[in-house]
Image: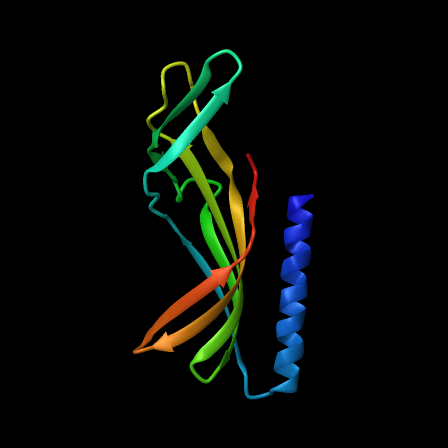
Length: 139
């Protein structure tokens, strides 16, 4: 259900951007597909398991972004002057490397998706983005 909701939200946001572009023909559209890897900072991890009990520790996660399924970003932007509105989908995955005793594996190997509506600003040949949106997990 979460994936359907995210796709519906993305389609609605793209339709809104298309409508705005038709009203302002001087807008420039761009589409990006980015493939690569990511770095995950240590984060507090809490595992609750019926047999093993509860454990909290600093989790060390890998992404394995260049192994299938790939880590990727899809982004559609509507630029006007040096600013843009964007819809972005980021697909990410996590593998816990420092598993506690009793945990054979812990991964979000089918990944999770972050769907965001971004505001982008071009500044000195760089682009700064600020975005907000839901996380859809595939655990």
